[in-house]
Length: 508
Image 1 (tube, rainbow, N blue to C red):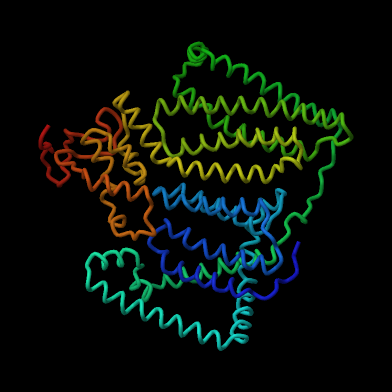
Image 2: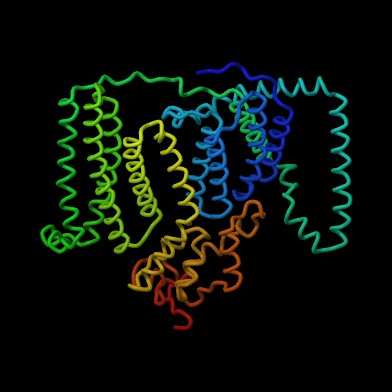
């Protein structure tokens, strides 16, 4: 698994690592946004230079993983919600490990990130040796670079200060573009960000120069079972799936009334009762397929036909279970509204259905024409990217606003905890529901002071809407309720100012 030690560190790699560390110190600390891409670009160039110096060449899959990782880093620049950003960061690290290590097996996909962390310690020594060699071999050039840099910085500071003093608009532009240097000078957090950027870029470059070969870690193959021993449990499972799906199809095509009358459940209770069980059934089915492939008979063409027939049938029946689970979630959302958890698990169920389709396609086309580990990893990254781009907080707010327009029911106590991505949809609510839903976002003091490189497009759009229309809850007491008034009680007896007298709103 372990390759030979890498050669000397290229000079381009050292400059890329230094640029990554400096940008991390200057741009991080105020939040996440465009700064992630600005930091990732020099780190990517440093890793590319290290790989080229080590004789490695970029292959199509390497480029796909690298571009996909950078694409995932656009999510924090577009969306204000923290949970899509977290998924995008995890996905970007996973794709970065695939781009740096290569590999086409499940072990390379799953264990690749471990190689990045393993390279942190060895990357420090590798970088120090490279820095020492660069300074020993080019003392004259280093002095020239330092003098040139000092002169350039001095000219920028002097003339920048003069132009800023001569024109207020230019001073505002310069202040908006430049990071807060006061916090760099006396903020220990900036030192920590510098160290994280330095170590992370060095680890990535070290991995690119000499990656661990996870594909060479071969597990012990499972002992093949006899045809009857292997097939009988799966055939019984297929019959159980078929019986369940027959009931689901009957319900799907108009049998709700009969089923609900016999069970005594409402539509919402019926949906809530079954979705989570069906989600777990889908996950367990994937585990059963993995174990079945490990122990499948491998005697010849007849065995291959048997495996494809039994597992193909199980996959088809599982797709119907996925459709049933999504239908139940649709009923659940119609009854109770959409939330972050519900949209997340529905998206996960959709992705699991896509994984089952990929398993079926790999069984038909073969592992060489469709490498399943890479296909599953690519589908997961594409799913995370699509999930972030669709703005889940905005979809939650949009669905709940539409539901309010139909039913006059809304949970403002939940919606006022959404991110700034939800502002355009919540802005359509009538007053005072609108102001109660937007008050927490408008009252966030940190959002107003966030610099451009840590501000998402969704947050900037929300600021424009709130600046244009503002909010006002005069005469109303916003309460976290659910029902006719949607968390706004115009006749609340509790005085928000602490009086013992009943609170009488101004206006009506």
